[in-house]
Image 1 (cartoon, rainbow, N blue to C red):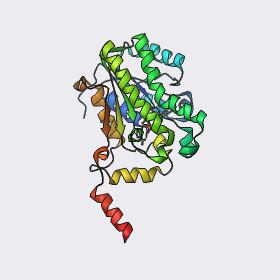
Image 2: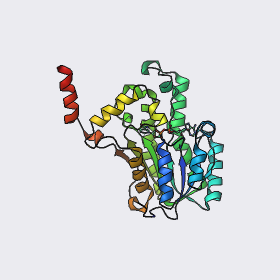
Image 3: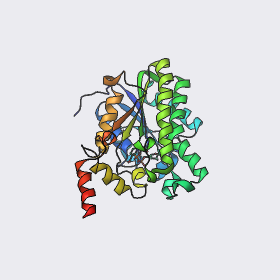
Image 4: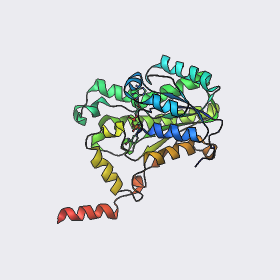
Length: 273
Ligand code: NAI
């Protein structure tokens, strides 16, 4: 449904790798709602992903930037404002990577170089982006920043290893920078804690399908889809949520508030037979 809820708004969307990416869906829907968008991703994703296809579809320019590199982020914000003709109204942070997960390293044996990289790419990158935007005064008043998180930030999911810490740091940056950017320019900063979703990053987790099915069974509404996540992001970019900031918002079909569902009870009962 097109309501032009983002008409006249300018946004930077990170993390669109392929059609499965959460960011891909957000970009398509934000474009449908009238936003002008700059897409960005790492140089690796430029080679391996399909971002050019998306850029054509939504008449957007791509400005590559490694989210751990301050010079590249400065270039991203400078060029974005030139390309889309003004200050930025919204940013989607949809960046995650863990070599420890990719290599299936058990939590007690984490490789510390990889651990540092996980934290830098998946969490500190949000601080870096906000810091660059803040110093350049690159965002409009009442702008909105959304970062994607996962409930492993606050409860243990052993397969999520070092990404759990990355998400905990990410959510803390949301609160801390949300305070500073709110005071400075009324820019709001929130995270969305999304259900497991079958994307490249999601599927990188060992036994992801089991995690997905467990969450599906233990959520009264079932898992939230990537499309539904994109719709939720759009509400946070819009003017309908101007006073929401520094929050971690659950978008998980009720998983975060559920002890156990009837569905899961039935599975457990079957195990006894
Ligand atoms: P994805 O693999 O499509 O997106 C991850 C993106 O991070 C990729 O586009 C990748 O190129 C980008 N990236 C990695 N290193 C980068 C760097 N140095 N600089 C710039 N970009 C870099 O997967 P997905 O699932 O769409 O992930 C988006 C966000 O959603 C991530 O933060 C992820 O942790 C989060 N999330 C995903 C869930 C899932 O089950 N798929 C659940 C909850 C949150």
